[in-house]
Length: 193
Image 1 (cartoon, rainbow, N blue to C red):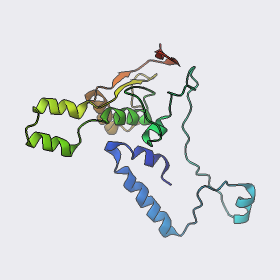
Image 2 (cartoon, rainbow, N blue to C red):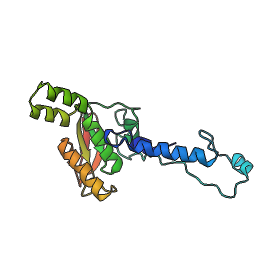
Image 3 (cartoon, helix red, strand yellow):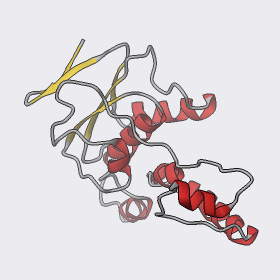
């Protein structure tokens, strides 16, 4: 249970979304509704319920890209990266600029940056100058590039949230190409036009 909220809550800056999942699960438990996970809804099982209504809530599935080279082993789904099922290299190209793409770009660009506790320790002990610490908070272990076909990234994200998330991409040095189309992926990298 939780679906895409679990994935959205997997990013460093949106962990609070996980409390929504817990609240929804608690409400479901208190409602007395029977929940069956991992069961195929065959016609026989549905008929045996004698339900007045059947509601399909199977969740969303990632959409695969119909790009030459998208079947390569180094091409992975954003969901798999957010869930931790797939690891990525140092240089990453995120294809797309919608909500999930922005989350992935932000998450990857923040990996390897200083956390608050470490930053505090280094500042208090004057281990490094404040500007170098600031840079270590903004530059992680991944170099992230985003490629979006539309005129701007962040389409589908609320206005105030979109603004702050896109500012994060700038601060974190995510290179964003808009009005750019990926036409293929090969051994050399990603080809765009």
